[in-house]
Length: 176
Image 1 (cartoon, rainbow, N blue to C red):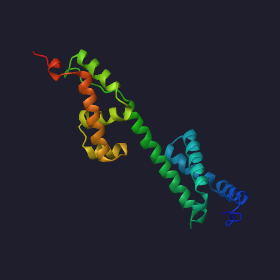
Image 2 (spheres, helix red, strand yellow):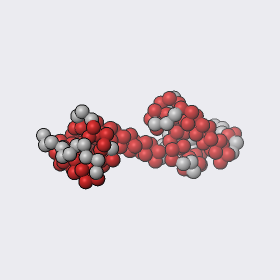
Image 3 (cartoon, one colour):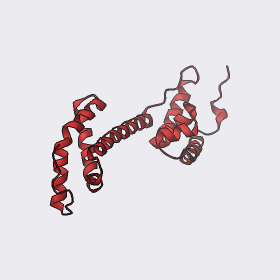
Image 4 (spheres, one colour):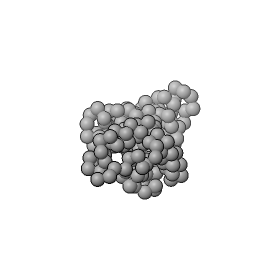
């Protein structure tokens, strides 16, 4: 493994040179790990670049670590997991709610979907997860990476907006 240049240098040139040496020495190893995590070349390249960018931002701390390579691998793995969570969160926030046809009529489905569409994506995701998917407050908070009180307050506000938008519940009751 190559030795980092002037590890103790505080000047901008020594700082950049030390990081560049580190990046060149570890880029292939990080890429291999990223490829195994992502399963595709483009995703691995992006992940490696993102991890190296984060490492550069905190280079003073990384270079002071006992094992900068292990630190870099941790950054790479955590970045991968964070991106997956973000994608899942975005997917959940933007996935239309499918209402079973047998449960409600088409008019109610259209009305409900239109009312839900007026909610911000994060609030909509909370309402859908909490009341449609019947997840607990704790589960929704963990899934969306926020506090339980945020879930409670956002759901309360969102339900109030839906009630205001939809009007009285008895209008939608059908008799058979």
